[in-house]
Length: 95
Image 1: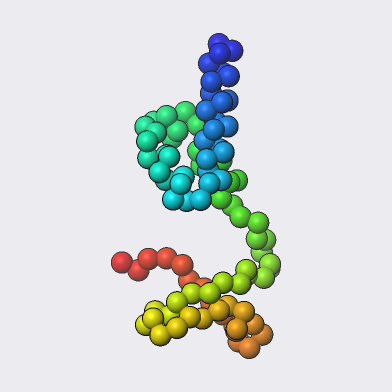
Image 2 (image 1 turned 60 degrees about the horizontal axis):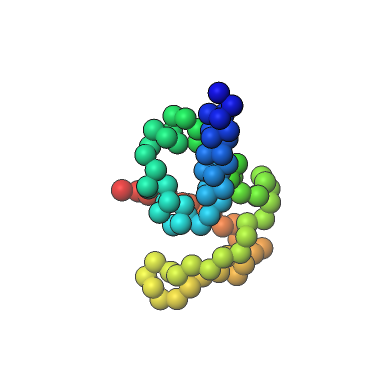
C-alpha cells in the first residue's frame, strides 16, 4: 500500500512540475499520457489552477505587451495608452 501511495505522489509531483513548463512543451508531454491516468487519478484541475493561475491580483496594473495590428500595418503597445483613455482587453473566440 505504501508503494502505491509513493507512486501516486511521485506521479502527482511530476504532473505538477510539467504544468509549469511553457504551454507548447506541456502539450507535447501530456499528449503522450493516457487521459484516465491524469484526469481520474490526479487532482488535475486543482493543480492546473495553482500552476497557471498567474500572479496578478484584482486591481493590479496589466503587464505591458506589444501586439501586431489586425491589418498588419504595425504594432500597438499597451503602455502607449496609459492614462490617456480606458483600454478593454478581450480574449476569446467568436467562431
